[in-house]
Length: 306
Image (cartoon, rainbow, N blue to C red; front, side, top):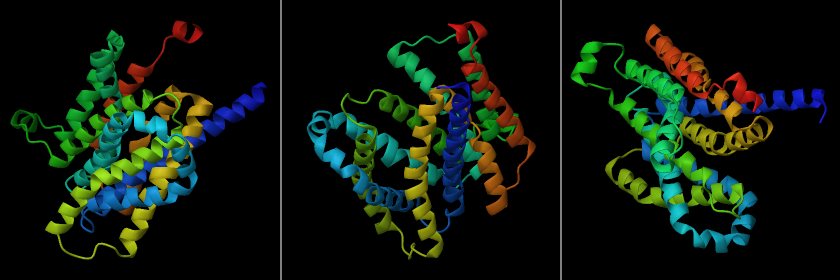
């Protein structure tokens, strides 16, 4: 590959990663903007039902061919689907009822910290002083955000409920990411994703039925249908395809760094569509969180050469 073609590939990779991140940022706008229009589990259920229906024509052949391997690893698929599909986004939609879209996106980008912590605890991966410093910066940023910068709130331990739901979602996403890294051999990415979508939807069904029995009203209207199509098709499928292309072109580390622009997209969209103000608390939290992530992921010149 020539130097010019490599530059084009890198540029395309960054565009793919930015596109995926921008699409995912819209998920937080939906979580917050529809909090008064549709219950959270119902939104999650219709999202994954849409994703399964749209994805099925492209994935079902691979699932049939790879079914013997899927059957051998049903426990893995079940755990991965429950954590990443049934719970993760449902927690985001629950969080959207009591916190802002900006807070959702800021807390969301802390998941790499939990990946490092769990990797250390479960797989004994090395945790350097630089990584520890980065983790501390990110945690301070999150703490600063959910306490609104008030020491009295910190001492009183009065966190916003939605912020805590989002923090739980970030932890789940970290576990889900670690599980994806260890997918069984012989399983294609499309088969893995579709199987998780389908099993996650099945696991979500009893919670959906319970929520429907306890709430009343017609939730399907022009606004909610468009939102469901957005999160079901774009946030669940299109962003996934773009992200995979970015990984191929850039590698996981560089693509992962682009993901940290998520709060910028969410902040801009929430300002445009939800009239949410962007204050100094958000900016300072973003600086702390982003600084911690950069410190954690930065490699020295020697590391680059090796």
